[in-house]
Image (cartoon, rainbow, N blue to C red):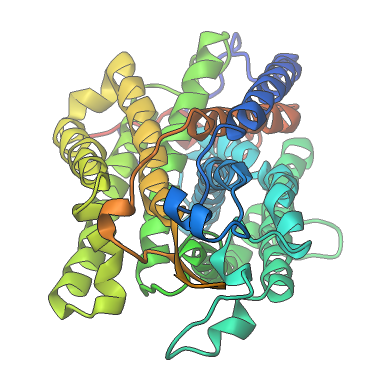
Amino acid sequence: MSATATATLHPDEKFKAGKAGQSLFRLGLVGFIIFIAASLIFSTSAASHYTAEDLKAAPTLSASGMGRFFYAYLIGWSWILSIALGSLLFVLIHHAVKAKWSVTTRRLAEILSSTILWIGVAGLVFVIPVLAGNKDIYYWAHPDAHFPGAPGKSGWLSPAAWAARYAFYFIIWIAIAKWFEAKSRKMDEIGDVAEEGHTKTLSARMRWLSYPMIVVYALSVNYAGYDFLMGTAPKWFSTIYSVNFFGGCMMAAYASISLFAWMLQRSGRLTRSVNAEHYQDLGKMLFAFTFFWTYTAFSQFMLIWYANVPEETVFYNYRMFSEWSTVSWILLFCQFAIPFTFLLSRWTKRILPVFVAFCIWQMLFHWVDLYWNVMPHYHWGADIHGSAVSVTGPLSGPVDNNTISFNPVDVTAWLAMLFFFVAAVGRGMRGNLIPIKDPNLGASLAHENY
């Protein structure tokens, strides 16, 4: 296909959201209420942070199962956040490189990234308890927390400073997502012309602003990964941790955009605007970030294991020589080896039922990856000497004590977050589902892989 080839929207194409958003919102809201209620019920049977021996020796330690609920909620919340953050970068990169093939799917990414506002509200479920003095979520909020060799962490990891950074991250992300979506939808109304008082067209303004926003995005996501996820084991550290989280964000975004397009097509929308050519390119990016995620995960493991510094290797000790070793092997094969092998093929990405299956597969094991990253930190150690109790936090004590101790709340909290995300997507679905007056729409409709 010539680089200058264009096409026009088919006269029978359905590109209006219509009542689909309202239906999604209702479905998501009902599902969220059901599963969040189930999560609270299951949390009553969840195990404490501490072993039975610790609780018997020191009754003052918390035996509440709500800590398990917060951990499961944090994992599910991080999973939907990763979709929104990855979709936001999709939008920024699209404008930065003047992409043409992705025009017909860009609005879907804008809708997914618009959920950041609601995800920020959902995060208050664990932010407010931390500010109020809850010590079950993050070890650094515990009064016994201490960081040998790194006293500065106590100031950085304090409830007030951590909550302030939480607000700062979301203000940045919401502002970026809202601005780009607003300009994109304005283009639907007035076309790609300069706004009053501006000499650049709308597409040019979005392109030039995307460059500095990519830098802002990279820095904020990097620090957020440390604060929200790596912060569950504050005595351990890795400078590549958030890069690996970013890889998961992009993997989740390309899989979610593909699934979003597929579901809309099943409702009779965008049946001609998004075709096998677009799915193939989305699949290419899903394949690329599957490899990128694996590369960063292996790089982190190799450098830490080779250096053999006890403060660093402890992260893998608890995942390689305990019950968690099974999950580690599952991730190796199911998050990397299997999808990497099959997504190599052109036809795996062009045969829609097969590609959709792999998108769902990657979304499932992306959650398993987050579960593997966070849940081993749930069990905390405690040094008990008579009446004196010192909480040593996650990744401490005998490795054998670090059991999976699966509880249904782990899954129900994830499903609650999934339905919450569906409701948020429904709230963002309105008007056109593709940018109908984008100057590159014709090229995107005519896009063809060689």
